[in-house]
Image (cartoon, rainbow over all chains, first blue to last red):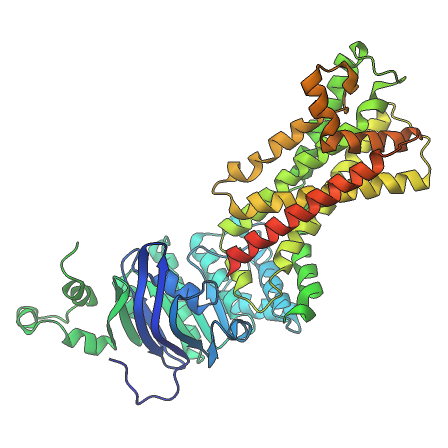
Length: 256
Length: 254
């Protein structure tokens, strides 16, 4: 269900396979992500979302398949891929003992950028962390920590950003803050691939949603198209717009 | 491939770890406190009953105490590395365009700095307790060189549990046997008072030759072959630990 009408995709995955010992986590995954879009990889716990993200961000080697990011093969040109991406992993990758500003300066230095302090101040402002910038991160709330985490991923404006379950463990307020940050990213033309187990999150943010189930992409489409996949009988009963949750459960079978 | 960034990246990451140490100096204090407490106890409680043939017991036992300081210091090396692995920051670094080995080297250099500070603190306490040496600049440099090699070897040893441990306890527990190794050596009592098998172990394990060397340098006694044996042990442990750590690291990041 890929569409060939768009220009060269910024992420291209074909026949991706990965096993841990006897467990096949990914059994032939294909998808494309268009430049400047938000793509959500949706799936239950253990569906293989994190494994896919780790392969895309060069942290894990695939067993089989072709994966390219920003035109570079992740296995052959890992260094070029790392220049093009930023990863915000499942656990906030921030240094608790440093201040927010020091965290940003650290990343800017490691990306070999000029004016690390200027970059840090700018990002603190964009993520409403200026007041907290001098404080140790260990004093931050969950939402602030995650915002800093995402701000750290933006240092150097990489064209592609991976967000692995960016709102897991956050309270509703923190969640909204992160959603806001992701929307602003996409508005600037950054390509975002996010994984989530929250259906409303995908619904809120994504231009395109792929559902990863038992190691395969079982559907990959825009939200509007996904909603059409609901069995017609059910549509007749429901007066309001069907929720993505219904689509998801209908597609993966009733496993509540 | 990323070699051009290696020094710069290592330097940036070293700055980060050193800031950790200056913000929580308790790790250095904890490292120094146990050897200092042992020194106090041995000198003022047991010392009177131990006949080492030298005029002051602190003189006799300081080399062993210095090694214990390093052995307890490197458990924090493993601990700090473990925390980075456990939190997401290690993965963030690995997904960035940096020299990948600099993440490890920054921890190793931090360990050297932290241990140096602890060693200086312990040495100052020993001086207060009456430790005196006639050692000249050359002897001091030799002592510093041996302690440096010993710290570097044990640091690379600590990298292995730091990378592979499943829990905080696991990351630092490996250092306990290292802390107790000096007790089965010439560090606190002459080995000729020990029963046969214990004595055989004590005389052939690395700590004895290192302790004898440092003691000889401090008291300007002839050291004989001990210094070469000590160097061989340090370099040997260093090479083996480095190879294992490097293989473990490569397995972790690929």
